[in-house]
Structures are given as C-alpha cells and as structure tokens.
Image 1: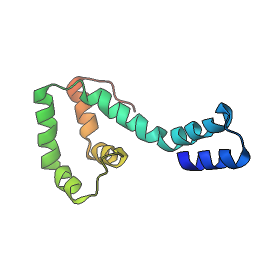
Image 2: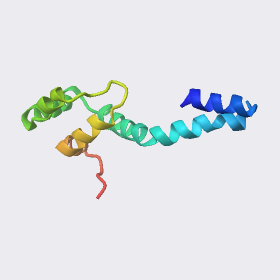
Image 3: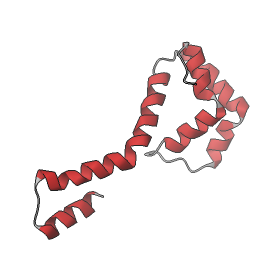
Length: 105
C-alpha cells in the first residue's frame, strides 16, 4: 500500500503531503474494523482480574474454542478472526458479565 502510493506520487511528480496522505486514508480504511475490534477486546480484558481470566480460560476450554483455535491459522498481526471466534463462543459477553459491563442489544 505504501509502495503503491509512493510509486504513483513519483510518477505524477507530486510528493506533497496531500498526495501522500492517500496512504493514510487507504491504511485506515483497510484496518479500521480490525483496530476497533482489538480496542474493544483490550478494554474488556484489561479490566479482568486473575480469577476472572481463569474463569474465561476454563470456559474457553470447555466450550471447545481452544481446540478450534489450535486447528486454525491465527495471524499474530491480524486478530479480527480470533476476536470473532471469541465473540461467537460468547466469551466476550461472559467477560462483560464478569465485569458487570453494560452490553449492547
């Protein structure tokens, strides 16, 4: 993405901040949902205490999600797929209940 933006800017002879800002717009458009999901998960999980984390891990194991994740190719850099699986397994709502956070309906 950055290389393409720079390549196009060089070909057009326009290295202005406005022209190069296309990279920022492209990057944000491509990654915004990933970043929002990671931010939500981080906000919930950073509030958990040790016993709450242990409870969630136990529930993840008993629900089969741990085995499922071990079979999948989870990317270290892209967490959206992992977060989606956690949401589908209901672990985020369980974390919210453990913290007594309001849930969206």
